[in-house]
Length: 335
Image 1 (cartoon, rainbow, N blue to C red):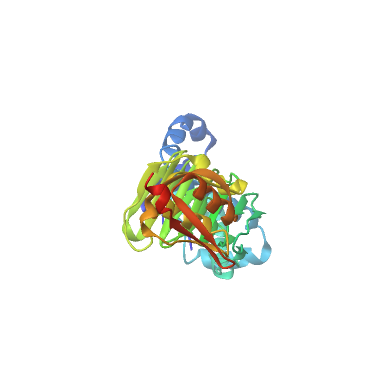
Image 2: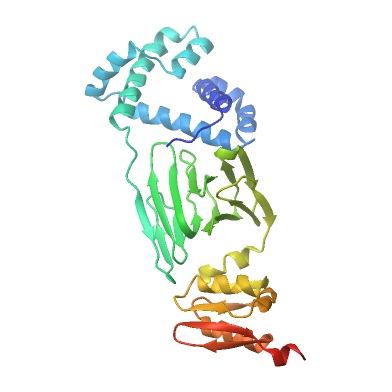
């Protein structure tokens, strides 16, 4: 599914691309063009899509069988390039338009012939497992515990669908194809950067470590931008993107096999630890759930975490083969 861009921005991108086909205009208006392009990621995406279309058609326009189909289609429809070229360069239209019509026909044929989306490539991890993959575009994908993503590249963008869990993305730069991660009704768009996305219990978290990304929620008409060190969160079932500054090292701790905690409630610490182990920790006394916990722990090692909590707080741990239960230590709590 192609990204829905603002029609006005798409039209501006088409106009700029067409003007820059003329080398004289390209030299004279280079600074103006760079200023326009740098004002938003959406403009970069729109211009990259227009350029990609032109380049792909240039490569295919001389294929004999396609040229015959192009001649048939050209009598019916013309593209935006024909209209804009005719308006901007009327003196050159007799030379440019016939050649361009053939290219347009090729595009129409290819849209019909190759209209199906390419197949999805799926990556998954089991409980407690982590996995690193190099994608076909050169980007690196790092999956956290119990996660699933689907990946594909189509004509206009690279698409990731985070179905569950958490993933880190080190995105290879490709101005022609933005890198789009879809999860929980939101889209995270980047051209080349490093960020993490987590989808957990109806909440989506996006953390940026390098570059810049755009977060959009089409259903709620929301758009936010993130700078390095910022995190955005939103609920799958309601609008409202919340942005805040975070300690990136804590968020990325799992990539080194560590559970990094800083002043989080014990209940939240237990929830994080349980993501990595089939043997769970359970809080037996609700009153201890609000104790603030800090520390660095090995993921999947619930016994070490429970022992550390017992040593540092008025908490005692009861171990069994099935689970670890944390209880209030009444004697220590009275001291």
